[in-house]
Image 1 (cartoon, helix red, strand yellow):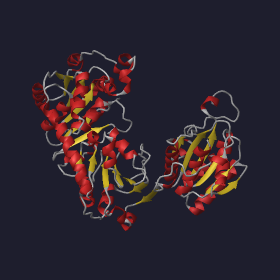
Image 2 (cartoon, helix red, strand yellow):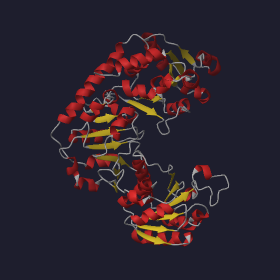
Image 3 (cartoon, helix red, strand yellow):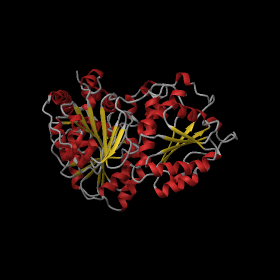
Image 4 (cartoon, helix red, strand yellow):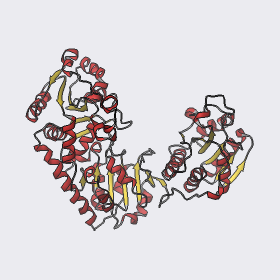
Amino acid sequence: MSNYIGVLVDELYQMGVREVVISPGSRSAPLSIIFCEHDFQVYVSIDERSAGFFALGIAKEKERPVVLVCSSGSAVAHYFPAVVEAKHSNVPLIILTADRPPELRQVGAPQTIDQIKFYHDYTKYFEELALPEEREEMYPYVRGVMRKAYVSSMTDGYGVAHINIPLRDPLSPDLAKLDFTLGRLEHPFQWQRGESRLTLNSKIFQGKKGIIVCGGDAYADYHEEVLELAERLKAPLLADPISNFRNYGHPQIMDSYDVFLKKDTVKQELKPEFILHFGQTPVSKNLQEFLAMERDGLYFQINQTFQYRDPSLSINRYILASPKAFAQALSVHNEDDDYLYLWQDYQGRARQKLQLAHDETELFEGGLIQRLQDILPAESRLFVANSMAIRDVDYFLGSRQQELKVLCNRGANGIDGITSTALGVSTNHYPTVLLTGDLSFFHDLNGLQIGKNHRLNLIIILLNNNGGGIFNYLSHSKSRHFEFLFKTPHDMDFGGLKTLYGLTYFEPLDYKSFEEDVEKALSLEGIKVLNVKIDPQGSKRLHEKYTCID
């Protein structure tokens, strides 16, 4: 536990916290002792109510967060008046409340109350830490939580962050083994408002090998500016399918990185010195693993508001700025394009292999997506379901000059409400297509009713592999209960929807009939379903054939 708490304490110091106000207690002893071992100015107040207002006074005067530490139980409640005042007068505070571990909650243990989101909407941020574990991967996690607490308290009007910390006995830390440096990034985490200061230090990009990652952003208005920035930096631009950067036939756009980043040797060869990240976390797992390797370079996340999107725990620079303004402000012009050529070589080979799916005779998702992209008219909306559908789009939707808006519910990444969301998109009267798997479609069949009642126009391309086909790619496929628990075949006849909802129904058997049915559906009113039956084992075999390069 000692180092787990030690890195928590150290990250707050690295972020700029200098004052800690402690109200002593047994459960919070590890926090209290280890704060005293660091370089903080530590104050002690036996009355939590007084401690809260004392910390508020320091923070108000010094305009930086002050940490409050208390034990579990009613001690937490005595901070509430100061929390209320901090919210309404915009004062930054970080409250660390010690708590009983889960097994001692709701069992009558002394000094135990429900501390989860105890201060309700009076805080700007709440998180409960995992129980302490002395494992290497836990130290970056703890530091990440402290960064979220600090920046949340300081942005969009100062306020309160509350972190609840469950602790098990024994509660006496081993100070002899205490190491505050564990999990530190090579470049300590920094954040700043606005893009102007960055231009003063733009030399950090001069002559350096860098990449631009563009994740999903339904409201992005910065495509051209970021592409121009990529040109100036000689940087490859890794375009997630829902970033809509794939609408540009630009030589610096990478759209097949999930193929060549499967190989660890390629990841090492392409390792950048800096990363600029716009938008959400990318769909590609291989890209996420690649970004997680970036612990010794500069990794910038640029966003208008603070939204910590860092599952790789690698981001060490957060820029609160308009992406468009940021891209325009960074005026570096690099000359060396060897690193870009290296990416372009892998991109060309991978895209060439993926494009061979267009000539495949056996029905599978890759060939269908490529043909759909050829057919869709300008300004179409392609709404993509989660699970396997969005991953297939990531692979097979190539970058080209087009006017196609790709949308997906990648907030919580669930399969619920997919059809209803696509119907909502269709109210814009642009040609709208939903690409979905059968389980996602089944999960929201009731959503078809609103489309019927309001006479909405939507084409639904149903990639029907009779169950959870994505699990064929995971280790679960070897488990004894795979069919029963994961594949969940439903053997459903979706043709019954013609009677139930009065929609138009197609069941294409090959690529030719698929193309004809899509063309016909585009000319018809109402909801149209193309039920394309996919052999899951054949699909897996063809994915392996087209999504790997030598």
